[in-house]
Amino acid sequence: MFGSYNRGDALLVEALHDSLRQTFGEGSRLDGIAHFPELERVHLPEVCWHRPPGRSYLTSPTLRRLQNAARVLVVATYAVLGAPRWFPPLAPREQLSAVRAIRDSDLVVSCAGGFLIDTNLSILGNLMQLATAIRFRKAIVIAPQTIGPIRRSWIRPLLRWVLNRCGIICTREPYSYNYVIKLGVDDSKVRQLTDLALYHRRVDSEAGSQALHELGISSDERFLAASVVNWSFPRSSDARASRERYFESFCWIVSEVHRRFGYRTLLVNQVSADLPFARRVKEKLGELVVLDERDRTPAEMRGLIRSASAFFGSRFHSCVFALLERVPTVSLAYSYKSTGIMETLGLGEYVFDIDGFDKPTVLARIVSNLEEGEQMRRRIDATMSNLSFPTFASVLAEYAIEPTSGSSGPSSLTKLSLQQQ
Image (cartoon, rainbow, N blue to C red; front, side, top):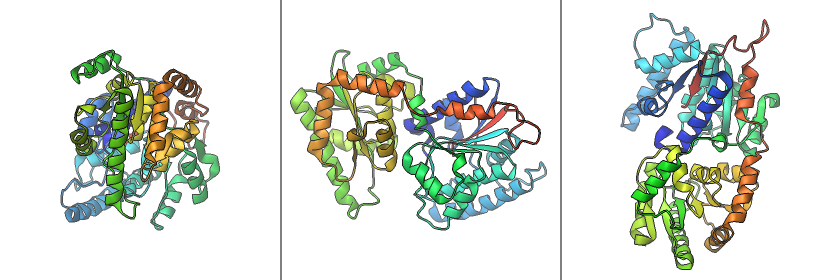
């Protein structure tokens, strides 16, 4: 995952951090496992960050796979032996310290997001961390997740084995909930929640206004905000044609909004890896587009987007930024995550498949949002103010009570292990 390089991931981590602090108090110690711990130490310095156990950072794919395999073997041996002090330093210190953090914790929480899908083999590292927690008999909570589909048949029994040994499994859309049940997981462990980012509470309006000023957007200018995604269309029979169709359709919609309303479009930067695609849009449309290339905090991005008249997002969590600020939103979905969450919010008519969407229909939704902005804002406000799901804090509260003698739960919650994989 991108970690804080992806403002959507940062949004989820902040919301998870706040849920943990709300439930267990400021005195609880938080350990985190993240791909770039040096970055997360800047983002959330109050968390003690470690590198993912078993992970290689070599640039050569072949050498990286070999080192991954060797480190996984070392870390697994270290965990099986109980993470002893005498163990030789056969893996990086920060990776071994991650195993000790899991061993010494009272509760292990798998970070909200999408870590339990097999679009790549990183799922094995994530499952290994959970298996380590199982080895040390820890209480495990899976924060609201996208889970599945698992296309590799040999991974499914591993996932089922791990999930059946977790205490609570939270899913963030109906597809994941149904997938976990069909996988053969005890349904009493599974909870249907929604995306944890919808409970984010940090916004910096002053920084957002200052950013707009720096970008040349005046306080009284009306504009469309949008995000693009540098998507490879892996499920398309002609990925290149799908990518070009997305590009041309996106540019056409932005041009039509300008022609009809005179509004420029602000392209926000949720993930810097999308900037090459965003620059291409800027190059084609020129002054119709304002491109923000800065890496901003989630609070700054919320402050930036809240002044938009409407939002047109290809990155889902940029759409969440907009919804949190009650900005009328149209979403392009490259996974069922976006579709499922928008549908559970009662906004299913405002989400479209990124591959082959009908551009006049999408434009019509954006135009409607621009023309009926206040009515749509009230609708979003009613939805966001009355989310019909349990909060993740209420799920965590089940672990905040001292267990009775013989319980398998934690004896006290002074140390929490946050897995941001």
